Amino acid sequence: MPIQLTSQAYCKMLLHAAKYPHCAVNGLLVAEKTKEKKRDSHSEPVLCVDCVPLFHGTLALAPMLEVALTLIDTWCKENNYVIAGYYQANERTKDSRPNQVAEKVAARISENFSEAAIVMVDNSRLTISCFEPIVLIYDHHENKWKSREVTPDCFEDWSEAQKITSALLDGRSYENLIDFDNHLDDLRNDWTNPVINKSVLDLC
Amino acid sequence: MASVSEMYDVGWEEMRDKLRKWREDNCRNSEQIVDVGEELIGEHASKLGDDVWIIYEQVMIAALDCSRDDLALTCLQELRKQFPDSHRVKRLSGMRLEALERYDEASKHYDAILQDDPTNTAARKRKISILKAQGKSTEAIRELNEYLEHYGKAAFCLEELMMTNPHNHLYCEQYAEVKYTQGGLENLELSRKYFAQALRLNNRNMRALFGLYMSASHIAASPKVSAKVKKDNMKYAAWAAAQINRAYKVS
Image 1: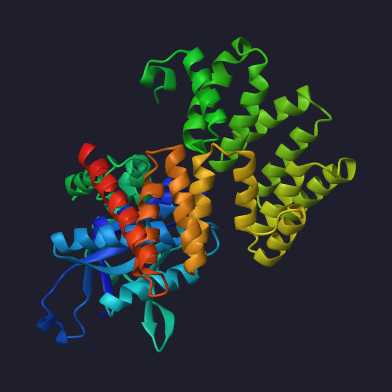
Image 2: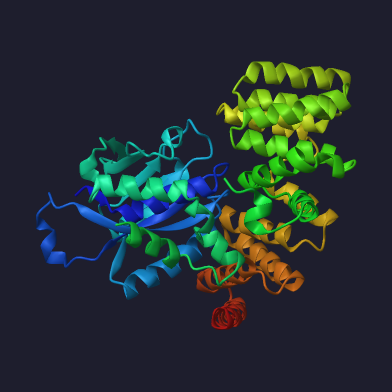
């Protein structure tokens, strides 16, 4: 079951990467929880409705990652979401391959969600106009992570996603994006990003 | 487009002070530095006195971050005119070459500085940054180890930092995170102690609080510990949990 991205999920990922251009960034993708019985049609894509930006800079230290996964898991349960994927933008522009950190986190997510995917941001194609999707989606097949061709079908509505992301990047909305690191620096910072979510809704 | 001084209703002194604060805090908010700095040096350079040179340096580096080669070059040229033989300015020229991805030229630039002054750590660090940017991690690590030849690995470095900066709760906390990540009961216990120490130095460090909770919980859950250690760690974890809940309530 391939994953699909909503405009909100896509634009928050890119805003996170844009906020910290000199750092690696990562985060989690969440999908709405569907009843177990519905999942026999394997052609139904999993819609990732939102993402939670996690860290910037050092991605690989264990304790805060565990804390984040625990807190976000609780939030998911309260909102009938499930953690369905992981995204990462590497530090270097030309490097968009998933590394050990990505594979480890994704493996953890797969324990609770078998079709977990890794979404890597292709930094070299990040522009304000966003005229093409710049993510690479990796699925787990036969013990390896393989990338899938990304088309507008990987989005709930590509032209809407493109329009919104471009507008928010242009307006420097990334300055207000909150990730889990920001939350740890000051608990009042809300990693669910209600302000940005509202901006997205207003632009729909 | 409105100027910074118009948009935020600030005078040149406030802009200069903001730049100084960002320098002192080592912030990498390059877009803001470019916005404020470009206007400051464009319209108020004569009022800045000797500060103008360090501001040129700060704005130049921020300009490189924002792909503003025009601005970077302007700053660099002013600095070259004022300090024609300076190694510090040569390093900035090298950084510009790095930004333009002319890595071989940049490397030669730093080699020239090092020939003249082998102890120039700034040039040495730039050379390592080039290797990192090119994805040559193994070589970067090798050079870094040579540079840190008295040190060794991340944990050891942080140990040195902690010794020379005993009041810095951030080094303490990061050391605890490294130990936790290394894993194993002994490292977990060490990490708990350092999280606790970081908290003593700054009782509002949330990472230290969370870290204390996580490490104590894991130790208590380990089958290898004695009943007393288990009991003690459950107490630490419970205390940390209560503190975390309190912190969220007041936020």
